[in-house]
Image (cartoon, rainbow, N blue to C red; front, side):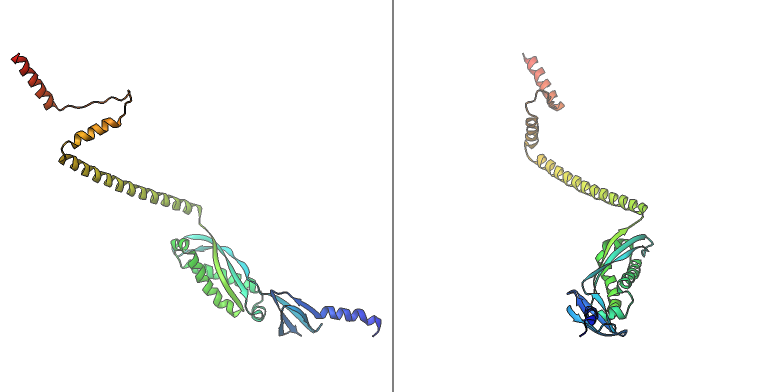
Length: 251
């Protein structure tokens, strides 16, 4: 073999070698027609006649662009999300759609707008997971035609206008006050029932009131600043005065 042909042969060998990574699949096009796929590892193609297109087979993520959507009850919200997917059929992903990453992102955006537009604002805030599942069903059906497999679709942020945020804050505050008022009323009712029961017990028990009075006085403690005033019934005072007068007249 002539020496001057050696560089040309080495150049052809370099053009013929294709190394496919473990997480990839390579599509081979022969004169513009898809003919076969290459497995991970070292592969040989025919230079100048065949060329390859590598496809990442790992799970990919694409943002669902932020957009403003009007809910079913006419509340404007700004919402975005993320879609997780992978290429299940590399041939379809390359041959059926020009840019499968951009296509699935835009399709998910349209599906998000349709699903959120059919829900009320309260359902939107409470059912994020359900919204993601509904969008996933819609997108997965079309993605299968493109050779893609949708893993999950998640809603990330839901932004509402500032005036609506203030209204929601006032509503939450009013709800907390309502619960506090109900709790206090229930406590007052229970206290009144206990007092009524205690009064009934004292009325039917001999000496119960006097015992309670003594307990109250004892609870004041020996502090000098405490002044105890004991009210004596007028009938008792009148009786004592009468007895005193009677004793005085007899003497």
